[in-house]
Length: 194
Image 1 (cartoon, rainbow, N blue to C red):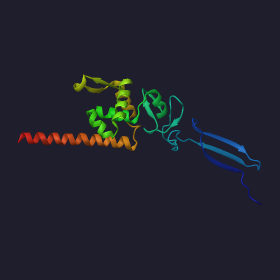
Image 2 (cartoon, rainbow, N blue to C red):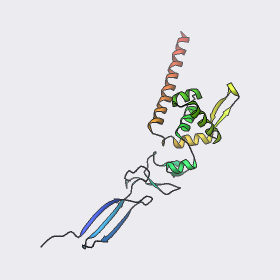
Image 3 (cartoon, rainbow, N blue to C red):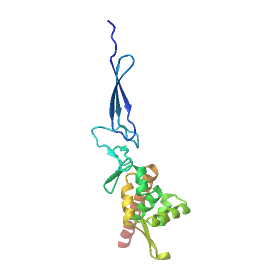
């Protein structure tokens, strides 16, 4: 007697915004076809692990993996980066300016570390002021810039999202600059004590 398959199984990627599904059908040859659709992150494309938390974007309903580069938490809700940009817009250069100000750098040093043209930098700074992320204090030569609460909230929300090479490199440069400044200050202090 000839053996014949009676069941065929397939695993396929699940559609966007659907967690998982199964379907049973019969083929014309009389086989039972079982399709299992497996969930993937709608943002990065990695397969979602059933043992880990799956996050759903609070605006568009995309399923997201539990990584900071895919899902951002803002005011108690999770968002994909695309929807977060609509709610709390912040570009990479804006983030770098805010990060530099929070770390205590002056604008000239931030501009140098971003390797950005003066016009682009000034335009980004004006956008930050218009969005109430940053405020200019003082007049002319005696002016300084301060990050407002809304800017700190945006910086904190995007801190783990902006992990691409350019922002990571900028964060490293800021850290190295601050370390170097501290070492120089200690060295000057030690020289003055002699």
